[in-house]
Length: 407
Image 1 (cartoon, helix red, strand yellow):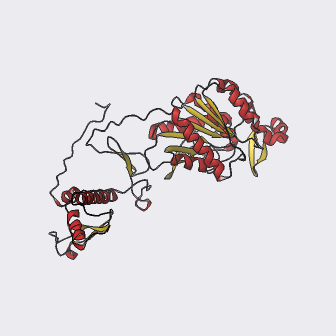
Image 2 (tube, helix red, strand yellow):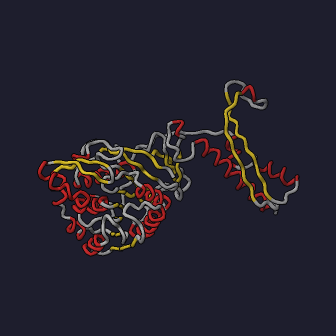
Image 3 (cartoon, one colour):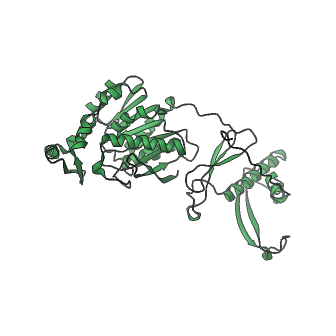
C-alpha cells in the first residue's frame, strides 16, 4: 500500500506537509485524520490507523497542523480555530485532487477539531473521535501552572510531552470561546466515540459528555486497556478495524462506472508525475513508474502491464486447451521478462539496425503431463490472442475528444 508525501496550502497560506495512505485498489472512501495536540502526522496512532484503514480500502490523508512536524508556519501563531481551518483546507485539497473526505477522524484535541470542522465540509457523512476531550479548553490542564503567566505576560513557554512550545494569550481566549456543545448537538453526521476507560490524559467522562450531547446515529466503543496515545499497535489496529466496519453503513454508494463495456479508460491521477488510473466498466487498477524513473511506484509500469496482458492471456489459453483435451494440467504459470537488445544480436529478426524488443516467456506446467503434452502446450502458448496481436500488424488511430463542459 503506497504512502505518498504531499503538501497543500494551509489556512495561513503556508505549506502543510501531509501523507496520503492509499489502498492497493480503488478507495471506497477518503478520510481525514487530525492528530493530537503538539503531535504530528507521523505519530504512532496516526500512522497505524491510516495504514489499517488503507487495508480496508479507505484512503487516509494525515497532515501536520501549521507549525508542527514538517509543516511551515509558527506554532505560536496558531490556535484551535486555525487547526479547524487547516482541516477544511485539507478537505479542499482532497476534493480538488481526488475525492472529498467522507470521514473525519480525530485523536485527542484533533478529535475536538474534527467535530468542529465537520459542519464546514459538506461531504462528510461520519465523524470518529479517539480519546478526545469534550471541550477544546481541556488541553489547558496540561499547562495549568503557566496559565497565569501567559495571561499576565501575553505569552509564555510551556513544556508538553517533553517539548517546549510558546503559547499566547490569544490561544487561551480562542479555546475559551469555542461553542463545542452546540456543534456536537448540531453535528448531523454519524458519530463514533472511541475512548480508553483508563486514559490518564483525557478522562472517560469526556467521551460520556460527547456521546450525551450528540444526536443519533451515534455509537460508543471502549478501547479497553489502550493508553491515551494508542502506542500499542494492537490497540490502534483494533480502533481502525472497528471504525472501518462501522463507517461502511454510512458511506455513499460507489458511483457507477461511466466507462462503456469494451473500453479501457486511462487518466492521470494528478498524484505525482506519472500515477495513472485505469478503468473498465467493472474494474480499476493503477499504473505508475518506479521512483528511480521519477514516479511514485503506485502501480505497474506500462511495460509491466503489457507483460501482464501476455502472461494472463497465455495461462488462460493453456487452461482452455488443457480442459478441451482433458490433459492433467494442475496449474500453469508464466514469468514474462521484457528487454531491448541490439538488432545485430538477434539472428532471426527482420530489423538489422538499432534495438528490438525481446520478451522472454518461461512456462511452468504442473501436473502429470507427458513430454509430448508439455511440448504441445508450449506450442499452444504461442497461439494466445495477445501473442498474435503482438506479432501481427497493429494500427493505432488517435482522435481528439472535446472534454466535457468545454466549448
